[in-house]
Length: 239
Image 1 (cartoon, rainbow, N blue to C red):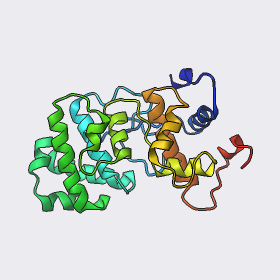
Image 2: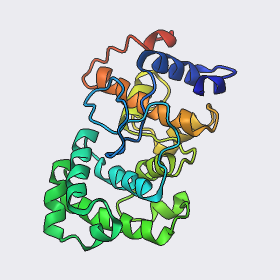
Image 3: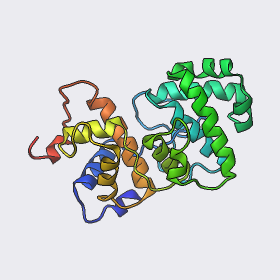
């Protein structure tokens, strides 16, 4: 269990504990053909697997997570998952089918996820990369060389598709921790990543849940200023 790993409590662990107690396990990364029980979430669709950290179980599920990590760039997961559904209907998310898919059909299928011209190319590049891996686990520097993959996307792929302890920093994470006074508003990605990784055990389930919990919390309390975060601000005396 995650709580068993939270010894020698510091503020980062206190924040995690409070979020976990409030929202419960989130079950990220959702997989479209997994019949799990969804947690109480905003914009919840399907495929979540709270408490099951064995997923993905095979290479094709890892590949699906790769595709999702591209599609969710600069958009909500609800839109990204709709694009995945569309692609599944056409290709069954088979890598070779994605590679030979006509460009116009690809773009129309993923239009709902936004930036469809760029993402259509990025999906093909990440597919080529996946096939070259031949079942091996990639290094972070390798993924970052793929066109369309930045640090957040690379860490999402490593954490969720390959179960490597890389903390994912997204805009929600920065928004919350800037509000709480831990970071500057425009702090660099690697600074925030190091802040989490140096204050937490290197545990994949912990990193997965923490990232997902911050996303859920931000959707509820950090969409409009002034932020009214009653859940976490009592942990920070100066707020």
